[in-house]
Amino acid sequence: MASLLTSVRVGLRAGLKTECRSFVTAAAQPATQSKNSVRTGVIARKKGMTAMWDEWGTRIPVTVLQLEQCQVVQVLNEETHGYTALQIGSSDRSEKNVTKPMLGHFERAGVEPKRKLFEFHVTPDAILPVGTELVASHFVPGQFVDCSAPTMGKGFQGAMKRHGFGGQPASHGTSVTHRSLGSTGQRKDPGKVFKGKKMAGRMGGEQATVQSLKVMKIDNALNLIYVKGCVPGVDDQFVKVRDAVKKRGDKIAPADVLPLPFPTAEPELVKAMPRELVAKTGGSDPYVMKE
Amino acid sequence: MLSFTRTLGARLSGITARYASTAANATKSTYNAPASITVPTQFKPQTRGQGLMQLISKEEMKRMGADGRSKLFDKSHPECLRPGDVILVETLNSMSTDKSSTFVGVLIAMDRRGLHSNFTVRNVILKVGVEMKYMLYSPLIKSIRIMKKGEGFRRAKLFYLRDNPGRAFRLEGLVKQDKANQASKAGKA
Image (cartoon, rainbow over all chains, first blue to last red; front, side, top):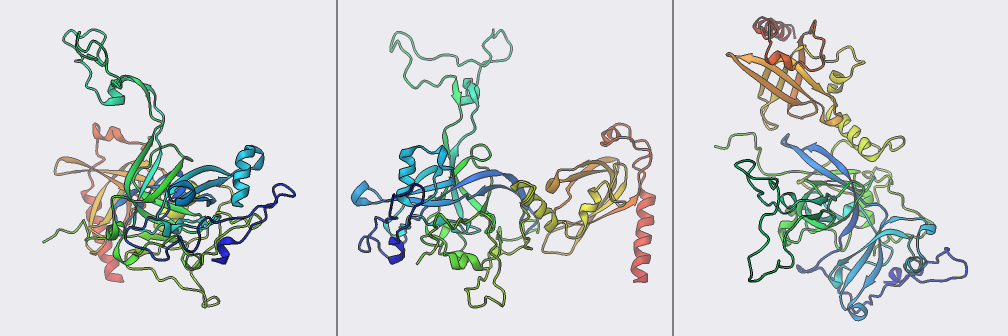
């Protein structure tokens, strides 16, 4: 545990000494991983989409997510904060663009100032020391992940696009109201429009989570995760990537890659890995007729 | 214990080379890929002068186009395909068998999209017009052969052939000749 409590001298402001403190004591951190353990997620940047071919020759659309200086910035624990979580920061930022309160926060952790901070709830056995860098090999090819990000903004949109309303007929006498809401309520009782009535308004820009996306490929040199399918948001968006919540235990990944690196990938193992690792789709050949 | 803790001085840039262990560092832990993971052909990332998506697209093209199919779409190459060529595309029925299907026809469209480059081939089979669209870098494509160079086609996309085929789809003679050529080649070899 000595390495966890190593102090890091920060040279940002002369004369200020700060310590990289882990708030977890040996007594509070259980050593073993159980089936209820939850490990941390990462913050990645959506870089774009491309396609790859799997072992059966099927073309698969993939989204490329890049981990950019993703580090643990703060450990939140039961005693002080009331819950156990890790605050993860992503993407270094120059000191001149960071406010003084935030500079102090990062100095305390001993990390470079970050652009984005998110918390990930973890179980006490999955706590990582402050300053730990999370890399792409935190995830394993073949496992399922959930990706959360703000959706693309669509601006002010009508009810048909925003809520999937049916609109009115295109002809047969309909005048000037083909795409409108129609009725918004009853008559004298209740005599008002209920709060939350679905109407036209600003659409998009809210957080959405796409669940159970398969990790198709890991790139250790460029810190890339290729997930099968689409991820909400625009390119260069910050995306929260976590292990899929709906795939518990053995279902999260193929049996021969389990258990997942806990609490995160070991640097020695990552160094020994080849640069790129691709997941197999598995199953039987879909282009061969089954007897 | 985790030794990934990073000091401010030692910046771990996003581009660190971590490759399979060589004989020199055999003392380090080795990685054995399990059965559900494939290790593709590895390249060294050349990040200068291009963005990330361009880089990975080019690497994937190099990997999927190792048999030289990129030259078919390279305008500066003498063996480049042109709209109007009569080509024969041989596709594997599946990745687990060696059986293949062939399709002969006139190349009516070529779309240059990097890794997603594709082309459309049209033929009239038993009085029914059939168009097949192929992804150039698909692993299911076994070979692409030019049977006859197109002459007199002045468009990039020959969609007008759907309505005005003329003599463009009289290809039986070509197919017979090609079969004879292939048989004689097999005989010589």
